[in-house]
Length: 164
Image (cartoon, rainbow, N blue to C red; front, top):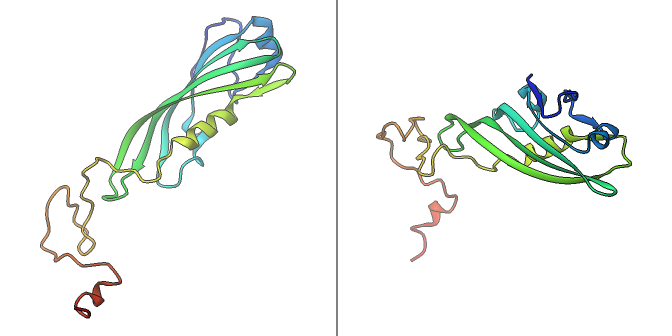
């Protein structure tokens, strides 16, 4: 894990729990760090997973509060909802939060987890025009066509010819 701080005397905590007294003493803080994807294994439903995570943080002081601006970026591996192909996709999300300067610890890891959870898409497609796989033979229709006859999967299909 690489930790880079714009303040030479400050080591970014691995768990992203910052001491408020340190931030106040330094008059604010700007830092960035690369986090282990293992810390975020439970964020996405399987088989989707995060493969790279970097966090950039800026702590600014106000009279009674500390403003935290952050950016979480990286890559995730996601399975297409139609063809089941695994694709790597970049993500980038920003967050903004205020904390009382009376707190002893500011837990940024919780905020990073929340931000990552919000980046998950309900239904991911590898490309907008993905044709998926054939429900009969399993052929990836993006690669080649198959000779299967389309099956009407509607439960009302049997009623089609009954009423005229």
